[in-house]
Image (cartoon, rainbow, N blue to C red):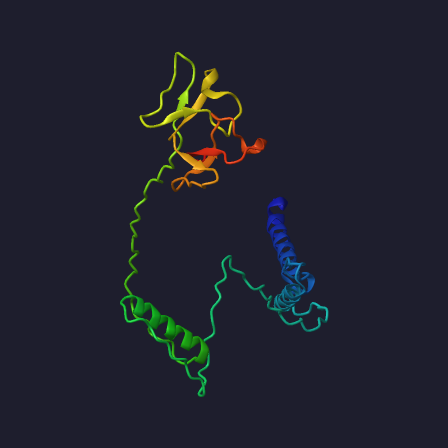
Length: 246
């Protein structure tokens, strides 16, 4: 029976102990205030300063009794200047020339043939604008210039007359045309047709000598190899034959 009377007393003691513990936890004087952790960048002094000031304000709002360090004013934000961009193909622009009141363009006289006159007048306007300035001239639209084709007739060169070849071996003996005689070429060594060599065909007509007979135009007078008179060996009044020079 005594055990039953002690149960209410034990229940009252447990409840009082729990309430006392709860009052101790809830007391703000016994709980330490912790400011929120903030991670600030360290590569930029301006951003670092602003981040620390913002963290101090948040800490002061949460924990008013926390002592914070005294920070100086943050430096101003420096705006970076970008380097000038360069283009691959820079275009040069001409400044518009200022008009000169005393400048007078030189007169230009263009040929009165179209479309050459159109191109000439445009060139005169551009030259005047570059020299004296003023408003930019409006150029006329000129048609393309036609190229003239010059036809030239190409004539084959007139063949120079030569002395026909004659003589040679007995199997291939070359005969001269009618009216011409086969002789040894006096300009070449050897015996010519007399020893089955080649010769030239000439007209058997005297030239040179004391009489001074002349050859036709385009021919020259050479010593006749058939006679014994040789001007190179002391001969005088030696007659010759007319041949074509090579």
